[in-house]
Amino acid sequence: MLWFTPKCPINAEDKDWLEDSFLWLVEEFGAERLKKTQMIFPNEEFFPDDFTGDVPYLKKTLRRVSGFMGVAYEKIEISLFADEKPPMLHPLAASDSKGSGACGLYQKLRSRHLISIEENLLSNPTNLIATLAHELAHARLIGENRLSDDCEDQELLTDLTTIFFGLGIFTANSLFRFEQFTNAQYQGWQTSRQGYINEEMAGYFLALFAFAKSETNPAWTQFLDTNVKHYFKKSLKFLEKTGDTKLNRL
Image (cartoon, one colour):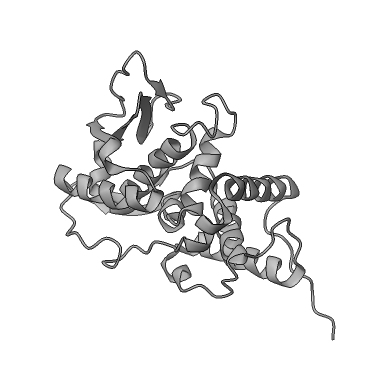
């Protein structure tokens, strides 16, 4: 009986770009860093602080995420902005903001990392952590002069960097949200999107992370949302069965 060869769940162009990006991150941060990186779970083991949705909670969460991302907490300044209107930039700061609707904003001022977060994120721990990770990834890429501020793929690479540093569950689960609501007048549903990569790309990059670390059935997949988990499983099966990748296992 012949078995069908698994198909790659993403197109060839995205596959090549994601694998090249993974190899670039290994080159920049080192294979040893990847070996030591563990996937961060959305549970009390990694985030033991009670959720309060206020500024003290934000600062505690920032301290934890900065530790995972390898950014010195003492060099970070955090602020909030409202109504999707980021604060005015310092004239000497470089911003990653590409217009209105940003969830976060990163600025480098001398040796300081200035991060601004849209205040509505305080009500959603997953999206808050994903946004903090994204802005701190800018600190690792732009702030450490690993990537130019005018790089065309800067935001995509920044999302991938969060996965490389172990915050992939939060990044992936914040890409698409479906929410039902009921109030005094209406009931219905709404969707929202966050981040720059799509769910298929996130699933494949998470599979590259697992494949490179020889994790054939990682426990952290239990925390992935349904869509991303589907793409992850298809991607990892493809990589395991075909070996069709530029990556070598660690």
